[in-house]
Length: 131
Image (spheres, rainbow, N blue to C red):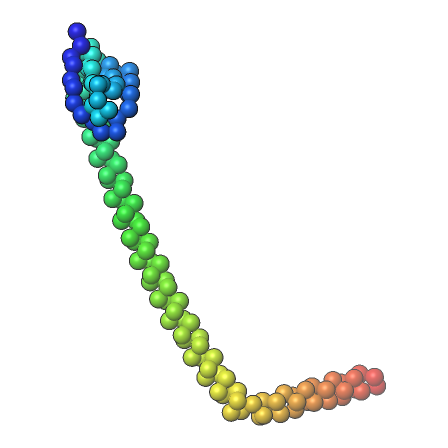
């Protein structure tokens, strides 16, 4: 013999389950009729199983949230480190440009003198090796 329960469930459609529970629309559009077959009435076990699954899902969701917060903090720290590094490079480039401007003509003179010295060394080595 089947037990009969009549309650309201908003947004419910026709449901069937192999555990012996079936729900179908009753007279009104907001009501369903629930029939429970006593042979398959292990609802307490099903509810406990669902509760365990929900607890596991909650744990997984909390772990995901914790990992997301950790990674967000890590990305924020990485961005701050990059900003500081960019500022340091910018300052060093500015200092380097100032020193090049202050001693620019001396550097060009040194490069020209070094090139002439290398040319004469190669010239004299070629003269000595021909003899």
